[in-house]
Length: 387
Ligand SMILES: Cc1cc2nc3c(=O)[nH]c(=O)nc-3n(C[C@H](O)[C@H](O)[C@H](O)COP(=O)(O)OP(=O)(O)OC[C@H]3O[C@@H](n4cnc5c(N)ncnc54)[C@H](O)[C@@H]3O)c2cc1C
Image 1 (cartoon, rainbow, N blue to C red):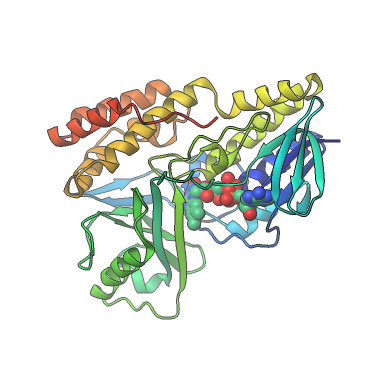
Image 2: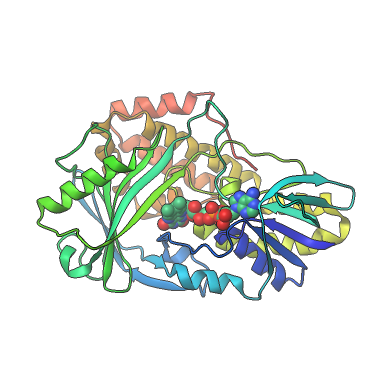
């Protein structure tokens, strides 16, 4: 019997697998597409990434354009996705090719059945299979973006060397709806810059073709050539329907560890992998239930659940906002003292910091924004964390 079986060998599953192996646990991963390359361009605050994570580029200054221009001096990194995969693969855990279709909890552990009929067992099974499909009838809010990887010199006016563009809410000329989107731009470390037209969250996600039209309109208006360049498409839910499976805790996007208001989730998975693996190693000898409890406590401690609820309400407030108010809302956000900004973006277990940041934001916002925030806060339909 294996100690730990992880379903899904994406960044979260691999990070957890590598840390479990470092703890001396016998770990196996089950992955449907083990040879599929990772193509996402992962961005993260440099101070959130664990030491040693391979980085392609770091911008020391970020610009944000709302109704005014703001400068953010918190370094921001773009992860070297190709090297990340190798980095997470050492020490090499066993990866089984296959699709997990069913898990059966027994007294000594859990057995996972693969689509091919094979069965694998472990004392603890963890679901790291990524964002889950929403149940029928539920349309989750999604972040969508359409990006182009352009030579730096073509777009130096938009993303200056050494800098990144966190968000530019100036609206492009061509828009089929008044839903506001922003331009995001990061250096890729290979002489190119990724420019993405981004819809932070919308229910349902803003279609990619609309984002493409907007991005091309923006770039062509500035005379930027867009032929012969690589495309990046982003579409993922920022609200994860509660996924609860007795005996099978989840991790990464499957565990709703993505920040509901921003879509960031990679750094959290990488950072939590070592403490989650250590908790499992300490408790495994006491049996499957003890290991599961220890794991869940590390991944979703009580303060993180409460912070998640607050962030969900922040998401609802943005979703309910009239389009014209959105840039003003972010203007108020970037005027917050840095510690408030940081608490809201990064303080996953910082309940007090998140509350202070949200109340500071409330005080700075104008009355229509305040009213929407209150209505979102009182909405009983906003669920909690999917631990
Ligand atoms: C295009 C894109 C860009 C993103 N950019 C950022 C960013 O810049 N910064 C950030 O912090 N976050 C970002 N995110 C959000 C989040 O960090 C990523 O979605 C991240 O990949 C989540 O990692 P994960 O390992 O939890 O899930 P995934 O990466 O989705 O990995 C899940 C794995 O499980 C496998 N799997 C699924 N079901 C089964 C099954 N039944 N059996 C076996 N295997 C299975 C899948 O094949 C996949 O390999 C982005 C997401 C996307 C989609």
